[in-house]
Length: 482
Image 1: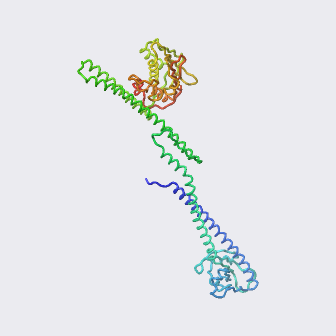
Image 2: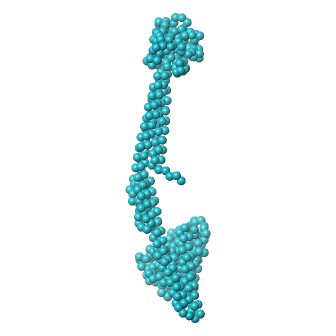
Image 3: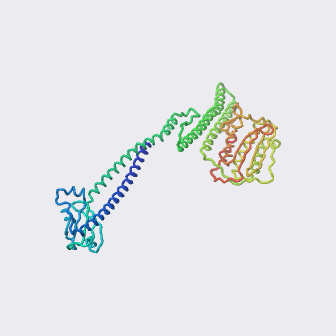
């Protein structure tokens, strides 16, 4: 696609607009001036008509002002009044010049003059336009005089009008050139911050975080553009930081099973082994392969979550039943004495994907069991307040440090510094947070009353969200990763 300069385009279009505006005003002024001059000429012709008609009535003849062709042009330029007297047939009886006797006859005006009316009319004479007034003679006249005609050439008026039109066109041209220069300067000044923004944006490198557009702009639209760009850079910084963290943590998560498989295979190949030993190595290798498969599935799920492809299918369920089912499964693994659950007597209807919310509760209970000492208690509670349903899981374990709490739901984050083979890729709480977010809810973690970790979920009791492909089948296995 062909590119163009915005400054040049704005300047040219503004100049063309101003030129058209000036031209339109000039044409309107020219037509108004011409109309005014014609009206003044008609008034002048009428005054001359009355004066000449009275003079004809008093003297009986017209005064000869010009008697030869030599001074014809000068006469039309200086005096420009041709007067003739006609009889009832239109024949010229008298004229103030020899030129006047050749004036054309307008029969309609003659008939109106005989009827006592005055008429203005425009004709062509000697290849030029003329303006005439024809009317009855005034007072007593000698002879058969019936009509009186006063004529003026329009050539002087046209010449003056053409001069004015020429000045108008020159003014419009000068105005267009001045507008072009002014618009170019104005557009350049307005676009200068944009050039600075582009220069700073080009200078921002992907490897350096925290860079922002620092241009000062007085224009409101440019301020909005700078704000949008800086917000975009902020999102890119977060995404870059997240991807760097994924690469760093995954490199460790992938290195651990790969190193274990390599060590087991190498040791086994050093000498002859019994079949049972080979089976142990193969079983251990299969476990590591399963771990790598789960990590690959986790990455795939992360991509689908980030792109928004996976959403919840929402129907109305009682949150107490979801809690009871999750607690029952957990008690089957750790014993009924370790988990305490006392649901309220009234139903807690929530519009949700019950399987997904159950998976979240499974993950929270699994974490509570995994990171607490055997025999310690776990409290599970559901309730509602102010139109919001609540679900919490609190353990009696050692808890986590205060500085760790804000990061528990981040991708690939684990509170423990050691990353053994049993540690998992750190996606369990992240997926739990993503599921809660799909339900327009909120998840938070804080220190419990007995020093352990307390995770609380808030879900709106009335949620209107259109359904989409279910997330539960994909998440069910991934949440087991921890």
